[in-house]
Length: 305
Image (cartoon, rainbow, N blue to C red):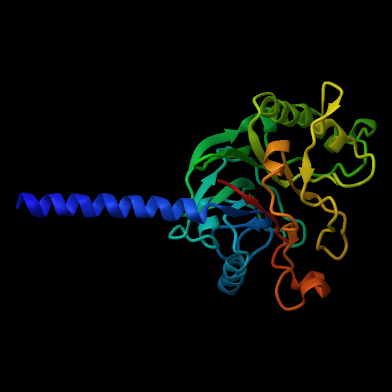
């Protein structure tokens, strides 16, 4: 009896060690993805982009083709909505804690909007810590999105990851010169995001910020990029995965989705791994009707030890 019990314990620990080893081996290279899913609702036929079972199946199949490990998601209603595309058997989903905000009548179909939250989907087996929501980005204003954060835990590297969705409607190159209300809101969000970046730089922490910035960071002399990429008058060497790529939308090729890597995280990037994932069938010849959402996923691979 005792011998059998000892063998069982030994077997259990051997399996546990093997499992951990597999997790660490799988975590050598991680594909980070940012994807605005365009009003992903829990229920069929609901919200500003009403979908049916076939639509959710297409999204789920496309998700599997991404070979993603960490996915920053925007415009998702709740956990149930995300789970229809990222099944909880394969993914752990961290949803921002943004409270329910007032809905509105959707443009085009006159349905009631669903909630827009930010989430991170983490492939099962990846070791991480949930750091909660970054509610400061909402500047105490109803309707603005919270960030959501995790910390990846490797054997040598730790990396903070934040998914964001910034204020929409301010697409000028210098938001400080515009009197548009969207630009005034963005101007209040910028120092909050900049503070998060600078605190990580000071602590020499690896970090990635990814999601829908609603801003064309790659345009020449972009004000937001210059603010984020400077501290005390010196460049901090942020890297943007979209710096030399164009967005997939046929009407809007200048990207507003970005994956920003801090200087220490940027050193871990697998060279040439930046991608824009066009939707199936037509690839780069894609037209708007081919799109499963109004943003294509973007991605980059980092080697994490």
